[in-house]
Structures are given as structure tokens and as C-alpha cells.
Amino acid sequence: MSALSAANLVNNRRRSRSLCAQQLKNDCQAVANSQGVVPTIPTSTSNSRRSSNGVLPSLTRLRIVQCFKSAKPTLGQLILKRACSLRSDIKMFISYLPEEKVEELATDIYNFITNCVNNIEDPDKIGDISIHFGEMHAQLCNLGFRPEFFSTIADATIAECVKLDGGAHKRCETLLAWSQLMAVMFSSVRDGYYAQIRAQRRSSLPQHRQNLLKQASIENRNSSFENDA
Image 1 (cartoon, rainbow, N blue to C red):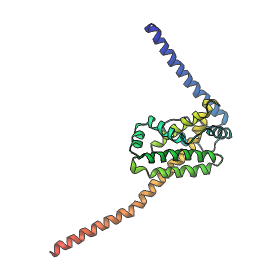
Image 2 (spheres, rainbow, N blue to C red; image 1 turned 90 degrees about the vertical axis):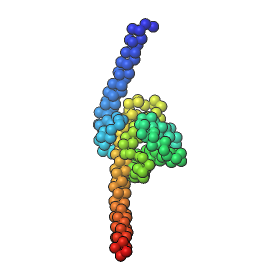
Image 3 (cartoon, rainbow, N blue to C red; image 1 turned 120 degrees about the vertical axis):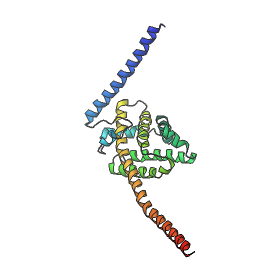
Image 4 (cartoon, rainbow, N blue to C red; image 1 turned 120 degrees about the horizontal axis):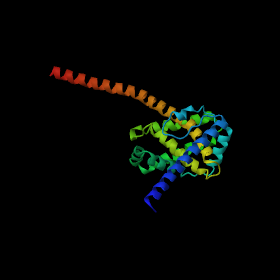
């Protein structure tokens, strides 16, 4: 094959991928318009996810439930693995954890998604479950967890859950459905996380003051002892 032919082949493939991506975007927009919702396509930013009002269209709920029937407990591990591949600092965070803690995180993610799907008809329940999930992760701050990780975990969850569909529906429709659910879930996850962080800081203030008073008392006693001497 000549160099010119090879270059043309590469350019054709690039154009094909570009057209496919544009078609997927157009299809998602069309589906969103037909359902009367604002599309939430998976990105690494949180602003788009916060546009959801917590109420999912009935067709979206049905598609998610049907899709999740093929989910297995190993889904949490797959999500963590994908998150590590998407973000190097998540990979570093995971590498410092004991193996049993990593398994616990994977199980928590699977249970989190399962509980939300099982309660998909109840937005308030999903909110409570998500807030609790965020509160749990506030305990990991001392181990290196950062709130920016949530957006990557959400993206990884969308990608792995879309694969569960196995082509039963149009990919853009499945992608849109899971994106909308993640918007609802991870908005409340962040709320729970930051609320718990604030609570931890408030509870630590009295102890900090007490330590300062003890230190001042010791210094005063030492000073008095030196003066008496």
C-alpha cells in the first residue's frame, strides 16, 4: 500500500469516527427532546449532572431496571478498575489501600447502585441512599480520597452500566438513561459528603480548644515552678 493510500485510509477512519460521534450526540439530543428532558451526557464535570430535578421519565426508569437485571456483584470492581484507568490519582489512592478495603469499596459501589435501581420509583429514597454513600466516603479523606473522584466514579459507572444492556436498546438511549440517573445520585452524594466533612470539622473544634487549654495550663505550671525555684 502506498503512503498516499495509507494516509487516505487513516483520514477516512477519522472521519468515520467523527461522524459516529456526531450521530450519537444527535441521537441523544433527539431522544432527550422527545422525552422533554435536558440531556446529561457523561463528562468529568459536575455542573451538567446537577441540572436534573430528581424525577426520571418512566421510559428511562424502565430501561434502567431492564438493563440492570444482568448486573453481577463484580460490577463494583469493574467500575473501580475503569475509574483507575480514567484518573491516575484514583489509581494511586487505591494502591495505598489494604486489599480488604478495596473489596469493601467495590461492594459499596455495587450495593449503592443496586439500592438506587431498586428504589428508582422513589426519588426521595434515592436521595437518602446517595447522601449516606457520600457520608461514608467522607471517612476516607485521611486516606487520600478527594471529592473530585466522584465525577470519575460516576463516568465509570455510566460506562459499565451501559455495557450491561448488551445492545438490547439503542446505545444513545441507554447512555442517556444512565446519565440521568447518575445526575440524580451523585448530586446527593456530594451533598452528603460535604455535610459530613462540615460535621467532622465542627466536632473537632472543641477537642482542639481543649488541647490548647491543656497546653496553656502546662505552660503556666512550668512557668510558676521556674519562678518559685
